[in-house]
Length: 187
Image 1: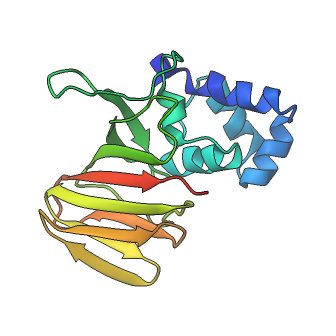
Image 2: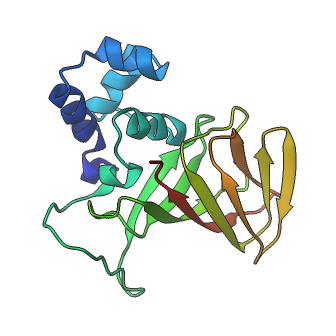
């Protein structure tokens, strides 16, 4: 993820708003040391933490993976070309592969991505974020913990839900799960 300089982008957002590490860490409910390590590129932020940071600074998560700032009103992602990829750590330390389909600055309303969840993935705490989310299971079996419910989805099944409710995405049968996720930006 270092090729995207996520930590430097977070530091710039913080400096632009004239905020201290302490203020940001308090608002996000994480340690000052964690924010410092992320900003200095020593660690990659967990998915839930990066989501909190994006929401706190009112930017979309895809902004952290943008390389170019040239203005345009569309983005083409060819199937034969390498999509923006990153390995996102869950809060439990399991790495998930995420391919971003729309990471250009003009893409403000939707964040589509292809996510690969390893067979060993756990997400005990779950996460939530503003907006809505659509998920299509491409391969494998997915269990979504949504609030206090467990929802089983098989290959080809989809779900659309309010993402402000705490939810977890887990492999349903001990095998890798691949899914298309489209998250809307709130507001």
